[in-house]
Length: 484
Ligand SMILES: FC(F)(F)Cc1cc2c(N3CCN(c4nnc(C(F)(F)F)s4)CC3)ncnc2s1
Image 1 (cartoon, rainbow, N blue to C red):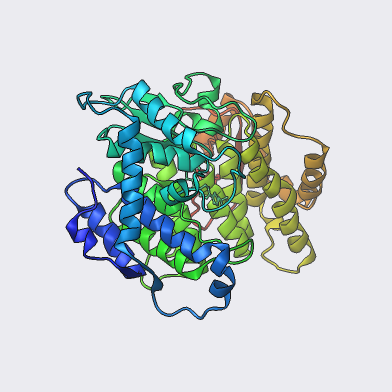
Image 2 (cartoon, rainbow, N blue to C red):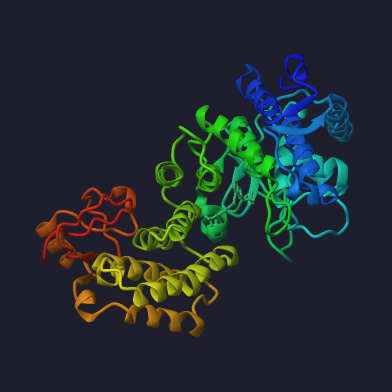
C-alpha cells in the first residue's frame, strides 16, 4: 500500500530541493509503490508558491540562495492529502471486495473529479496539472484530470489502473490484463468528451492523437515521471522560476538513473531541454539525451512518435546544426499519418518558418560547407516534404495550401541543379532491387526498424550517390556510398 509514511514525514518541514528529491527517492525505492497523490501535492504546492503572481516579481529579481525553497510544513501536505482521500472514499462505496477496477468504477472516479471542477476556466493555463490545483482551486487541465483519476484509483486500492499517454492526449488502462481502456478526460477545444468509452479500434486510434496505437503505458513509477514532466516552471511568458526548473531537472535525473524514463521519450526530451539550458556536471549531455529519446521511440513505440524528432530538430536548429536539423525533421515527417491540428502546427512552423530561415542564412552566408552543396540535405528535405504530402493524401481534411507551396519552391530552388541531379528518386521495387544489389543499403521510409536489408518495400526510396558519406547519422537513411 502506498502512503505517507514516517520515513517521509521526518523530512518535513521541507526547506530545500534536496529534501524534495529525498522524499521522491524514498517513495520510488519503497517496497510498496509510490503514492501519486502525495507526490503530486508536494510538487504542486512548491510550484505554486514559486510561480504564483503574488511573488512573481520577487522571484525574478531575488538572488537565488543554493537550493532554498519556501518552507513546506507537514500540516499543509497532510490537510490536502486527507482532503483528496476523503473526496475519493466518500464518493465511491468501499464495501465491494477489492479486485480489478471495472469500467463503472473508473467512470465513477472520473465523474467525481469532473464534477468537482470549476464551471468554466481557461483550460490551457499553466499550473493546472497537479492535485494541488485540483484541491485548492478545483481546476485541472486535460492531463491533470487523467492523472487525478489514476491517483484516485490508487488511493481506493485499484492498482491496476494506469495512465496511457500519447503526445497530445491521456487516458487510462485497467483490468486483469491491463487491456481495458477508457477515456477519462477531454481533448482539444469544442470536442465532446468521450469519458467512459473505450479507445476505438478504428481510424481514430491509428491517428497521431493516439500515436497509431503505440501509447506510453505507464507503470506507477512512470506516472511519477509524468507528474514530474508536467511540473511547469514558467513564471510568465519570458521567465522561469529558477528553483522550480532546478527541482524538475533533479527529479528527472533521479527518475532517469532509476531507469524509469527508458520507455518515456517525452520525459527524456524534457530533461534534454533543461540540460541544454543548464548542463549538470558529469551527466549525459543533452545531445545524447535527445538521441536516447529517438532510440526509445524507435525501440518501444515502432517509431510512431513525432516529438522525439522535433525535440532533437529544435536542438540542432538552436545550435545552427542545420544539416542535422533537416534529418530530424525528415524523420519526424516520416512518422505522421493522419491529421491533427496540434502536430500540424509543429510541421507548419518547421516548413514555413524554420527551414526558410535556414535557407536565408545558408544562401546569404559564404560558408564553404553550406548545406546547399549537400545532396543528402536535399534528399532529407524531399523526404520531409514527401511525408507531409503523404499526410495530405491520407487525411480527410486538406493539409497543404498555397502558404506551404511558396516556401517549398523557394527552398528547393536554393539547391543548385548539379546538387539536385545527384539525388535519385527510386519509385518502384525493380529499380529498388537494382539499387540494393549495387549498393547494399537503402533508405526505407516506412519500415525504419527493418532497415538492415529486409525485403520490405517502401512506396518511395530516396537515395543519394554521396561519395564517402562520412558522419554516422542517426536517421534510418543510409545513402548509397558510391556513384549509382
Ligand atoms: F497528456 C497529454 F495529453 F498532455 C500528452 C502529454 C504530453 C507530455 C509531455 N509534453 C508534451 C510535449 N512537449 C514538448 N516540448 N517540446 C517539444 C518539441 F516540440 F520540442 F518536441 S514537445 C512538452 C512535454 N511531456 C511528458 N509527458 C506528456 S503526456
